[in-house]
Amino acid sequence: MPNKRDFLSITDISPDETRRLIDRAMELKATTPGSVQSLAGKRVALLFEKPSLRTRVSFQIGIAELGGYSLYMSPEEVGLGRREPVSDVARVLSGYVDAVVARVNSHDSLVELAESGSVPVINALSDLEHPCQTMADLLTIAEIHGRTDGVNVAFIGDGNNVSRSLCLGAPAVGMNFAIAAPHGYQLEESVFDAASDRGVRADGGPRPTVHPLVRPEDAVVDADVVYTDVWTSMGDEAETEQRLAAFQGYTVDDGLMAKAAPGACFMHDMPAHYGEEVPPGMLEHKQSVAYQQAHNRLHAQKAVLEFLLS
Image (cartoon, rainbow, N blue to C red):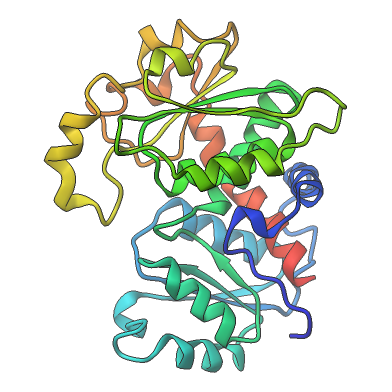
């Protein structure tokens, strides 16, 4: 595919493109399923090394609703980098399909898929980033607050793939971002630098801010969005006990939400580990938009697919 574009990182799309994709996702959400056929005849491979609920279902349904066809491939079927070199898989798939959606253990595998193949590669989760989740998050925040410029986002928890993509994505659409994480679990300084460089407000307001913090109570001051994720991500299970100790005090509950701005919403990318980062029932909290956020994966990903393929 000449001049193909990949979506391995949220930084692969510009701030202006990010805003346009949010707007397009809203338009697609408002249409009757199947009425937009922008992927008619397109074939998309879903190459998954990790289990999934929201990612797999939302991509498969989204591709079908846009008129395309998807093929799911499990780790046992492909053995990415084990049964066959990643480069061979990329070159073979490029002759069969129009795009590859890959959910991988290592971000390096994504990079090699993109470099060796001739069709767009979409990051459906890697150890480094989760840009499709961030697109759904930004869409949800825009829906809830009616804007993105000047919205204050507080992430409570691990400096992982989800918080990394959100940190890089939020300032690009005018949001201020703060993360409270224990020492040793913070995002890299280079991520904060890149996020600051991408910060821009369309309304001409002050440049978005990015703050690494330690105390959750400090992060949620004036927060319009309070976001959390699991303390132990897939692939980090060997560190479970260590992480459970390190993240004590980082649970998002009624008490912490009360310290945020009036009208603040609660977000979680799911699945949740109840009794750790959230108490039981927190996803049904009156301020929670977690299920709306999950459902918006469908619409945000449809916008990304259309952008890359149509």
